[in-house]
Image 1: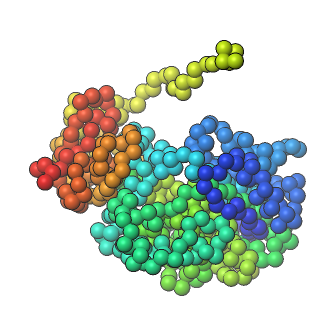
Image 2 (image 1 turned 120 degrees about the horizontal axis):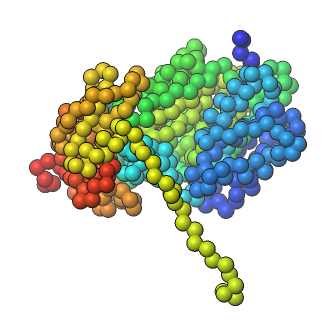
Length: 352
Length: 149
């Protein structure tokens, strides 16, 4: 069966904030309305809705169901939810459109990372018997990976600071970004360690945020967007959940996903990598074989704004916008999930 | 009027017991008896904590291997401000530790005193918890072999 041509035709994101007092419905409703207005469609034009969020963050089972109020469920709609980043909801929507049942899907995600200790909450994803009872935070697990990379000479502290300095500088051009800065690499290297070998700027900034994108197939996509961002390859791979059994100095799952998504077939102009830690960006670049000519994270990336469960879909939105604007012809969007780059989703998009 | 307010206690709990299965039952029992046991993987590598299924091939693993209570640090990070519920309440090292006789490292805490006392290759030894109900926290933490200088 031949695959259908599917593209992102519109995106909307809410500027990042901390300690938001709004509910998920209150933050999603205006973003979804803004997206529908931008693309020029009505709710009734959407054949499938797919949502990414995490109940652990609100501490309430099935709290994601409340978010349906932001999209409206009457007359009846077809919708689904993933307990994961919105990027995985996008993958589900892509599959749904591939079935031929629908032509247009709206994917949305939200995360209020600052309403609880997100570093500890995310650790509840780890092995419930061998790891979670020790209560290691995600930062601590990433720090173990960073130490292994530093000792093996796969990365240096200077390279890690360069990633942070570039991301904080690029954040000035992005209205969604939260952390911005103009520090030099030496300034950052002079900062104290927070969880040695990591410094504060090596770790992503937890924020509250949400976003949404519209996917459409074939001629519908061409009608809805001047220059759709066509999905040419998408693939998701997972490393073992057993932390000690993985290589600490390379990302096998990211390498396989990139190969299956066809990253190496041609030049990548812009890569939006979901790297919550500086050394992880370096690991991902190695794993995917990205060259110096690829512009990495012009948005500032997850380091400067990491709404948990929405930061991956944000990478898709940013990458697609660079196609819409004509700034890039072939782009890569990536999402990670789990400790130490456990899961990796890679997508290649092109303009026509 | 306080007396008119209906107050009911809310206790979040899972009021049931569950079995952890054959592998974890044996593993947790061995820990409560201060013994370390791992399993041998399809490729001959020994896992500690034991793996029930081979992480690469998915094959069920049934060969148990007795291990000593010492090991070697393969990577570490310094938790300068511990969070409640972590193995130690004063600054400590997280580490991946390969138990002698095993090949695949495990996560635990090392009570190193100061980060000058730990490095990749540092030898460590299990410190057993006083209370051992059966679980990974039956190992309170690891001590640096030879003591903390």
